[in-house]
Length: 504
Image (tube, rainbow, N blue to C red; front, side, top):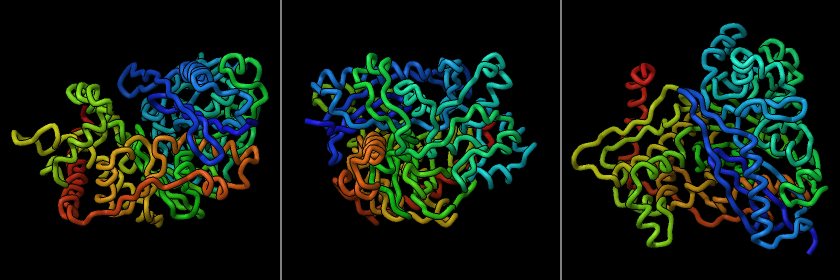
């Protein structure tokens, strides 16, 4: 058959997803392997990178065996991963402590002290991002202050995708799209700055050299081949941020095109060709050259409905078992029985604090407007609308910064819900196109490998060959007044409650 497949590996928050794609972007086979999130104390949210690696090995072996795939048929591998990791490894590559993930806010005080010492404006203008505890910067300095025995042994700080690249190839790397997590990264030039490293207090030696996301940085080593079943010598590219790879996998590669994210987290990514930032948003490099992504990243995306299903979806799980479908599909249909605006029920989806645009680690999830006439269906609809309001909030802030989004390209599991996607179109007033939503992120990682090994001439060629729109949602104006009122209440609720939230 020849080396016809590209492999994409996604290190997500809830699971590792692995897929094999043909040159045309069709999924040949895929699998996922879940792993735990640890919450040892308030503000601490951790995962074990070695458990990620075990899931990758287990998943690849299963994928190859169950689908009778010859490892020699895999032409290249791309890896994407969750943002703002701070994986501390020693000189032998051993993980020194569990990794504080993107939801972790333990370094709040440290970040405030850095801003007071250096200046919030200076940090923002250099890095394109405000200094918040969710970023990698504060986590490294937290190690320095609270885990000195770990800090002294650190050889490198890795990101989620670069850690898996290291386990597969033995090569230490850092892709450009994940650089934005450290405020010593020059967002104008796309490189580390030695002087800013010194000023912040991060050793420059901790930071691997920057590579283009599609650059082949290494090849599968024999040890990894034994553990995964992959063929030694298979090329591996640097990979990139999950949201950026999902943006590529949704076909968003030109200025002004926008991805709508419907995974565990929510938000959007606007592709821009000129530098544009706002302290309320997130700015990073796209996984394709000469492009940035102005992003809104929220904690309450698909994860908000997942939480609701886990706590209140027992009946839907039973029904799903009988019908052979997903409990989320049944919940989505239940939400569809309620009219726009949820009859006044509003949900604030701040289930792990909130990132952009409010940046409040103390923010809490809230249901407002409940009374004896309200039902589970109202609450489901309110969850979906609350996530849509958070999307609109970020889009509005981006527009005020000079980055206006047109139509959106939806990705992630939430995009499988026709009702939820239509709600987002109606709330934002924007047309939403849906490509292969479940596989956009792993497809983006695979496309990086395809460009890196020369399977595609360039990213335009790759997108043209792999991305196809499956359906389109046009904004319906019939619920516009209800959503206008709901959005106004959504914004006012947080403003009224934020001081109370900070007391908990």
